[in-house]
Amino acid sequence: MQLIFDGHNDVLLRLWEHAREGADPVAEFLGGTNLGHIDVPRARKGGLAGGFCAMFIPPEEDYPARVVDENGHYNIPMVGPREHRAALRIALEMTDIADRLEQAGGIAICRTTDDIRAAMTQGRFAAVLHIEGCEPIAEDLRNLEALYARGLRSLGPVWSRHNRFGHGVPFAYPSSPDTGPGLTAAGVALVKECDRLGLMIDLAHITERGFWDVARESTQPLVATHSNAHALTPISRNLTDRQLDAIRERKGIAGLNYATTMLRADGLENPDTPLADMVRHIDHLVERMGIDCVALGSDFDGATIPAAIGDAAGNQAIVGALRAAGYGEDDLAKLCRENWLRLLKTVWREA
Ligand code: ZN
Image (cartoon, rainbow, N blue to C red; front, side):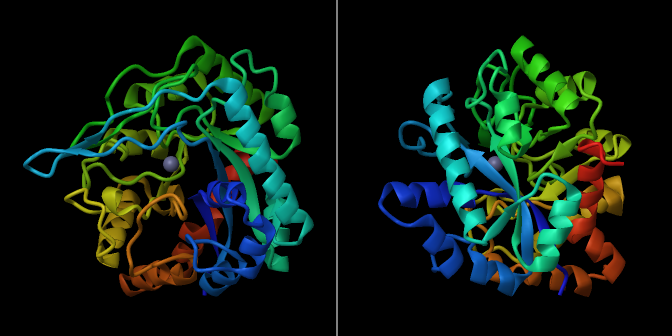
């Protein structure tokens, strides 16, 4: 088994939503259920040793319905940003859940790569706290250091909606990721502050122009924690070959998103999606960027994923498929965890 450190999951969102309905997040995560994708028993079974745990602030109202035309092409209308104070309250509630999971021994909130390796050795889920869409951060950045002190080590300026820091890509198929403007002036200041603090910047949901803005304003390796190859699945959320070339030049990472909409050539949300589609994307990313710049970014608890994986317990199915496709154990170790650890060592300035 190859232990996996994964680029993106939404388990904190699931636990937060269930806690609002009266569930106990500690019992749900440690004891295990059949809800969603990740808990301790299923993570252990599938070798999911840790990953970036997103604090994603859901829209205030329901997600808008997908608008589909006669060719099966679709677009999900964008929603507005969350108001800062409400978003911060939710992010702090999610941080509290992470703290409770840590106190109960279910996760370790990791601030260094040594923390990640130690947690993986001890069999505790190695969690890196990440904000996906920066509405919880004040426009003048006054609370960023406080969040860093709580363990925040990574952020994406935007989710797939616009906010004060920048512009996100809508979920549209087929569509280029070049859908609008990029960073705002506040977004440029945010990116520079991330460089100063050693906070990783995630480009997964930002427009293509925002991607180039970050490439210009930041000195970090370029990272998209959960995005695939646009050449294979032309959805707005995937990365063009030009973006992949820039990630390679900056020694960054693209993490394979298991969302079927981002894996299938037809862009459909359909769990009947073969592992071969995942291997095809990995092959393309590796051909374009080399084995050191590719990793996994499942989107567990945040997307419809192939039934062949199912949930965290089935995570080794992709490792097996890659092995069968000819990847050796050294390459698999890089794809599964070592590339993320190498990158974080750089971004967190441990080296
Ligand atoms: Zn996402």
